[in-house]
Length: 531
Ligand SMILES: Nc1ncnc2c1ncn2[C@@H]1O[C@H](COP(=O)(O)OP(=O)(O)O)[C@@H](O)[C@H]1O
Ligand SMILES: [Mg+2]
Image (tube, protein in one colour):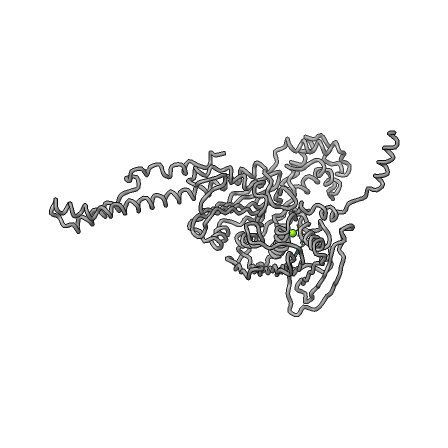
């Protein structure tokens, strides 16, 4: 009996085979966010535009991006994304667009929009899956030649299938990339749409010129500043967060001759002395070859790392937007009455530097609450509730700052939060929400509280001014009668008395006006102590 079962399962095992990453994501496209037709358009636009912004920024070119979404027939769209970036060399084009998990950003620690090397090839796969159409890529690196490809993905092999390929002299020399997708989708203009993504991208990237030809007309976003933010720096991993498996792999890949030089060359901020101290604490010979380190040695090193005081990773490697850019972006797109902007100093999670920035805009053209989340300058439009940023906003005691709240703040308020990091911890491959590391929530709340304090001072001042104006009006109303009555009593001219009353009212300080005392009190004690 048992024998028969074993035989049957052995039979099944012979049918088992390797699964390619393309097959996996074809079946699980929801993991990348492709779970409905409206969102599909957004993701494809986002993957293309994010790549264009990454490429131009890395090449230190002021971005000019053209985007078109055109309805071809019901639920079928053409999406064109064009940039003025460095372009892609011929040999790389098929691999980048025709292979999942092929990219230049996964193996490095540097602030950027892309990370996994999944984005653009998945867009190609989604297009062929829903319409059967190949994706067209046109690119030039500025060498006077233009390459054009039409390709699909061989899903079983995770390889490109080249449908058409040509190379021509460029009519005019240019550099950049243009991609054309034909996809199934639905175009809407609500909160979580392509339109919202483009608008928010303009806020967080005010150095970019964006043109969006949408199914409802053209929108142009002119750059508000002629300068790129400072270039982020790539860093080595930090020992603080390293795990046994990763350390073991790194030991086998390194070119270092000894374990101690491995530690000091492959990790950031580890000098010779610290490397030797770690080896000593782990009880291993610092001179042995990294390849000779056993699994036990690796475990000992990871333990020893926890006992040694490590220098924090360098934090000047990030490129935050900065208070001036945030201000420019928010003013340009929202035209608020008041703006409070905070850029926090960098902090570290699991050995990765990160930094938080917050802008709170109030009044003006803002009609209703608006929350904008950004990670490395990319707007996050979905999974608001699962995001560390939303949790942080909900964790602030807004009432203390004079702002009404129903879980999230109410009123004519726009809150933008930007996290930048050499590695943003997203909750999933679809990169829609930031994971809730306690230190990230803490930093976000501190930034929000600092900005909220500024806003509360402004609102208190405004309330006081309004109150005074109201009092003035009441006095004015009675001034006339009082002046006339006093004229009769004292014989003084009504004209003169009226002027005298006005002068007294205008000079009255707020605290002279009864009932005003407590108004701004809460704000000054808010913030710091709040957890
Ligand atoms: N518009 C572009 N210009 C230049 N290079 C690009 C462009 N789009 C994509 N690339 C290159 O293709 C790679 C893969 O892109 P993608 O699949 O979106 O992954 P990721 O952005 O996560 O690295 C990028 O790392 C980049 O090197
Ligand atoms: Mg990308």
